[in-house]
Image 1 (tube, rainbow over the protein chains, first blue to last red):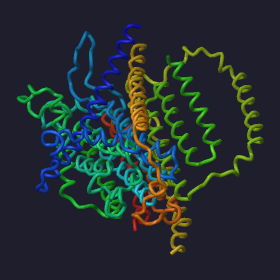
Image 2 (cartoon, chains in turn brown, purple, blue):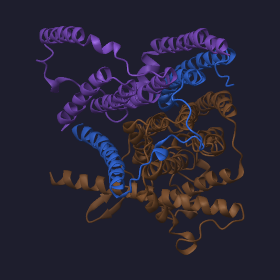
Image 3 (tube, each protein chain N blue to C red):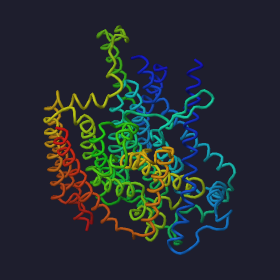
Image 4 (cartoon, chains in turn cyan, purple, green):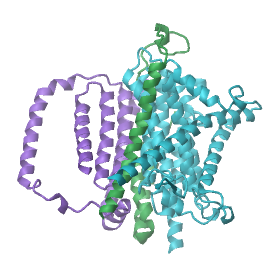
Length: 340
Length: 173
Length: 125
C-alpha cells in the first residue's frame, strides 16, 4: 500500500516536472523566436522587459491571463471554449512517452526516471494524439462563426491529415531498422556514436519527417491556416485572452514535441555523437539536439516565403507520399539482403 | 482496480453512445462519439491489447470522425428533429433487443465461466509483435484479401465522388 | 506474469493521470482567468470580425468538396499505413515471404494511389 502511494507520488512528480519544463520552454521559445527573427532582420527584438527583454514571456503571459476573453455573440459557446483545451491537451500529453535522458535520479530513496512512462507502442501513441489536435482547430474555426476562422480551420485540418500520412510513412523506415515502437528502445538501437544514428541510413525519411513536421505544426512556410495576408489570423481570428494563449501554447508545445521525436528517431536521442564526448550528461545532449531543431524551425521561418495552398496540398500528396513509400520499399529490400 | 476502471469505461461508453443518438445538434453527437472512442481505447488497454487501442484512436478518432466532421460542415447539417420523433418505437425495439440479449447470454453459460480461467489476450510485452507475426505468417491470405478490399474501397470512393460531387461542382459553375 | 501485468497497467495509469492533469491544467487556467478578467461587452465587440465592415451572411456556408475527398482518401490511406506498422517491427523475423507480402501490399496501395491520381482526386484547384 505504501509502495503504491510512493509510486503514485513519483509518477505525479514526474508528470508535474515534465509539464513545467515544457511550458517553460514554450514561454522562452516565443522569446528566442522573436530575438532570432530580430537578429536575422538586423533588429534587436524585445528589449524592454528585464535584461535584454528576458522577462518578456512572463509579461506576455500575465497580460493574456488578465485580458478580456471575448466570445462572439453568434459563436457556439460550449465548443468555442472546448476547442482551445482540445488543442492544448494532445500537445502536452505527447510528452508522456519521450525519454529525455538515460539515468534515473535517486532522491529521498525514490527513483525518478527521465520519462513519465515507456509504452511498447510509444510512437503510435504520439501519432494517435497528433491526429487529435486537428479537432480543436477545426472545431474552433467552426464555433467562431467567422468566415476567416472557418476557412482557416478547414485548411488546417486538411493540411494536418495530409501530412500526417507522409509523417507516419517516413517513421516506418526507422521502425524497420529499430524493430520496436518504443521510443526508449529506438534510442537504445542507435547506441555507439554518430555513425549508428538513423539519420545516415534513413536520410530520405529524415527529410520527409522534417518537412511533414513543419506542415503538421502549421509553421512557415506551411502556415496557410493562419496566413495573415489572406485569412487575418486563420482559425483563431475570434479568439482572445487565455483561449488565444492556449492555441499559441499548443503550437509551440507541438514544435517542441516534433523536435523531440526527430531527435529520438534520427539523431540518437540522448546518445553522445562520439565516445570521447560522453562525459557530458545525456540529458544535455538531448536538449542540445532539440534546440538545434527548434532553431531550424525559426531559421526557415525567417528565410522562406509562404507557399500557396494548392501547392502545399499537391506537394504533400504527389511528392511526399510516393517518396515515403519508395523509402519503405528500398529500406526493407536492402535490409533483407544485408541481414540475409 | 481493474474492475473499477472497467466499470468507469463501460459506463462512459454507454452514456456517450446514448448521447450520440439523443443529442439534437450533430456537432455535439460527433463530440460525444470522440469521447466514446477514447474510452473504448481504454477498454482495449485493460484487455492488454495496446496496439488495438492505438489503432482505435488513430483510425476511428483520428480519421473516420474527422471525415464525419468534414461532412457535417460540408453539408452544414443543422439540428435535426426528424429522428427524435421515433423515440417511443426506438424504446420498445431497444427493450426487446435488451431482453433477448440477456436471455441469450443467460442460456450460453457465459456468466458461469470462471474469469480466472480465461487466458490473457497476449503475453506482455510485445503485443504488436504478436499481431505482426500472426498477421504476416499464419494469416497471410486474409491479409492480402484485406488489402484488396481497401483497394476496392478506394476505387469505389473515387468513383462515387466523381459521379456525385465532381458532377455537382461542374454544374454549379 | 502478474507483476508484468501490473507494470503494464501502471504504465497506462501514468498516461491516464497525465491526461487528467493536462485537462485539469487547461480547465483551471481558463476558470481562474475567467474570474480575474474584465467583462465589458458591447454589441460591436461581439460581432464577428470582418475587417471592419458589417458582417455579411452566416459564416457556416457549405465549402468546397475537395476537403471532403481529401478526408475520404485519408481514411483509406491511414488504414493502409496502420497495416505497415506491425510488419515493420517483425520484419527481420518473418523471412522472405513477409517481405514479399508487404511488397504486394504496397504494390496494391500504389495501384490505388495511381488510380486516384489519374482520376484527378489529388488535384487541388
